[in-house]
Amino acid sequence: MALLERMKESTIASALTARAKTDPARPYLVHDNGTLTFAEVDSQAEALAASLANLGVGAGDRIALILPACPEFVVALFAAGKLGAVAVPLNPRLTEPELQYMLRHSEALAAVTIEEHRGVDYLQLFENVMPQLPELRYLATVGEAELWHDDRIFQFEDLVSAGTGRNYPAAAPSPSDCFALLYTSGTSGKPKGVELSHANLPSAAAGTAAAISLAREDRIVGISALFHVYGLAAGLLGCLVAGASIVLQDEGGPEATLAAVQAHGATVHFGIPTLFYGALEELRARPRDLSTLRLAVVAGAPVHDGLVTAVATAFGVPVVAGYSVTETASTVSAARPDDPEEKRRFTVGRPIAETRVRIVDANEPDGRELPVESVGEIRVRGPGVMIGYYRQPNRTSEVFDSDGYFRTGDLGLMDEEGFLHLVGRTRDVIIRSGFNVYPREVEARIEAHPAVQEVAAIGVPDALLGEAVCACVVPVEGAIVTGEEIVDWCRETLADDKVPDLVRFLDDLPRTDTGQVRRVDVARAVTADEPST
Image (tube, rainbow, N blue to C red; front, side, top):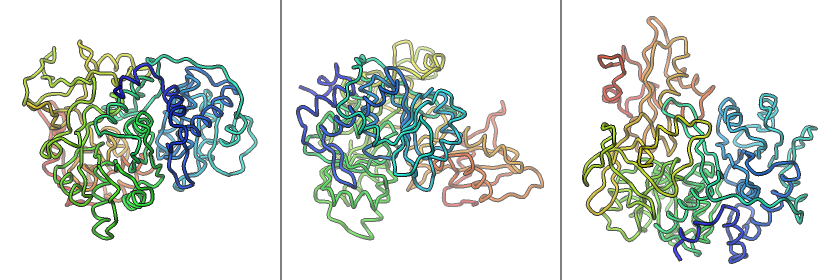
């Protein structure tokens, strides 16, 4: 039976329980301290769910996960599913204001956080923000620090231990119920909460697993951001539906990933283009034995065909590219390992199972579908398409057309063989190392600098990042300001992925007759190899 057919009536929790029964001893999570089997993950998730239920956490409540790629993230994710709660995975690299906004907007009742990560003291951070978050009643921490006295704060391992063997009210969520709330920036740079159901995520996971022929014998590396939709669906849940193993990497750089291939006998290497560019440099400096690999999968950012060729040569395996969107629970289309080489090099493959893609003329009110080989907006309908944007019904209605297709805002064409080609975007967005950066958010921060008159943030091609963030600044007359000052100013409130890589100073910004900045003309004046910083 096809993977997707098996998942149609499943929920996240029931899928894990079923796998734990059929493959109890098979490793699911591979990490620095060993492995966890499917049965062990299921058992720990049951125990955590019991303890959370004892605290009053139940169906529909929101549980935020502020964790790197670690076993506790996975256990907490499935515990939420068992309770019928909604998981809210958040990037641990968010700034304090960003994190506070998302915790408040999601109305999180509980949060699971790492105590310290990459120099950030999350215990101190939560001590600062919890008084501003009346809905946030419980905090579970991962680490060994001595906690301050507060009856709302618990050690993660204590909760798992206390819940072992305890019963709790069984939840019976419907596949159509919301399971996860993933935040993605809007066109204005403001975060939107994408509601994904118990059916959305497994369908995308199963479709991706089937496309790349993921099997029980596979062990994947290269996914270090489980809070990201691709890491969550195609990576973590893809391994669940296929019975495969995933290597959890806190450090996601090329050196660590290549070392993980050798150490764990990985067979499938996932990654964004940045990771593979770094891997090519690393292999040139220090060749490694990658003979266990059978496939490399590139997704999350624009992929140059030259990268596909270079990786295939260096790794000695087929390379496939994919196209993913948060609102479609990750994968829309993917190349297959046995597709012709030119299709794997120049396209993002064919739509995954039961996903339909239309190419339409977005300038027409009815979005007329265009013939093959025509460039238009990509629209998607299928089992992975989101429920909607949390607490934003108007915005939700705007992104669906009259036939129920999601408007991606991306430009593409479908060729005669049914392969999708990405061409560009109809909306302003910079895809930097696999993360969406919306210009308005960067611009709003820079405009607040007293020496800045106006600014336009644009994406410029970059071999390593895919696109680099370039801030084109018009200073206030007579002001003295440097690119380094602008970058430091941004670092105070913006996440690292949004901080400009380049700063260029201009006398003015080219504009249309109606006063809009001509971003195309700005981009023409800027090149990635002529920074002002």
